[in-house]
Length: 258
Image (cartoon, rainbow, N blue to C red):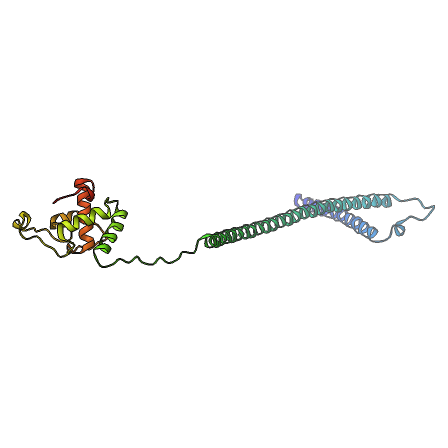
């Protein structure tokens, strides 16, 4: 027989054997599936009949398949339980975090409200205290009676008395008698008196007024609050008394021309 023919024959023989083996494996698989699909009582062997080798092999294969499936299901259940526990822990942590954030926000809002209330209470207390103090000051303040303006007679006596009141406020010394005596000697009580014949007149600065004051002296010793008119009786008296206090200590010390 030719060589190629033998090769093809051997190939056909191997293919046939392989087919038988594969058919047997498929049959065993089908039997195992069928056995697992029916109650355990359906696969029992009749009492008294010995089990064949095929039945023993099939039972062993079914047990192995069932054990493998059970083990796989058990492993899957363990994984599912672990995942569920992990998810539960994550959800619990998220819920706790949200609850803590809400509690912190509520505490912050309560603290802010407390500070606002305390600030308002402090402002109210300050305002009430200020109002009480103002009321107390108003109650304690004596009622001031209006003081009538002091009036002076428009004559020599009134001019001297008004001048003395001003001199006292300015700290200028002098008495009624000292002023009166010098006024009578210098001008006889005439507020418009003027000396046009002495040396001052010759120099162009004649003496004027009740106490015969020259213009430069009147300007230098003028007392604030009085008129700038040298003929004004009160202004003339106070300026002359101010000059006499500076030069002689007081108008009371003047007994002649000065």
